[in-house]
Length: 225
Image (tube, rainbow, N blue to C red; front, side, top):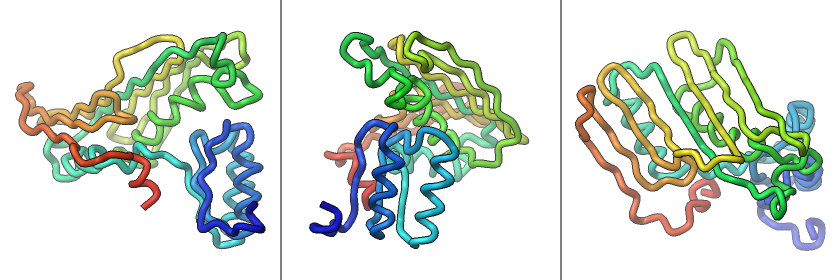
């Protein structure tokens, strides 16, 4: 198909276990790629495939739609404009329940399943979007399951003057929230990986601004653009 049709770009939406192989097929033909999360199974795959991207001068990016949504841009603007003062703590909680009888592919090791590959990837992507990648140290705890992956995990990303606390679970319907707290207030997003609303509070807990995206029909268009 790649040789005959020569598409302008390819969006890969299979399970993580096949992402590296399919991305390579495209890059060797100099076809740009957006690949679903988690883009790779491990760092060795990431280095190998992205090295091909550089050598062929072909665009390749993880298809992380959350990072490009209008609500994320608005929250980032509030943060950069100093609306909450000096931000020092970011908390992200994402979770849902995978049915082990009908959604085994989302849990099994051979398919790249588990909370880390399917949920924590959102947390980490958003944490580095807001706080950057200058991470001094990382601490991680995970709860293993019978499928050889993790049912839930907690990560602490330590910066020089900030901390990001990440929690993800595929066995509990937790309250999904992203909260960035600073010296003058906080920014709150419910369901941070697909939300259309952002709330800005002052240090006394008063709602200062409420942003709601009423225009978006398909959130995938932003990452594609």
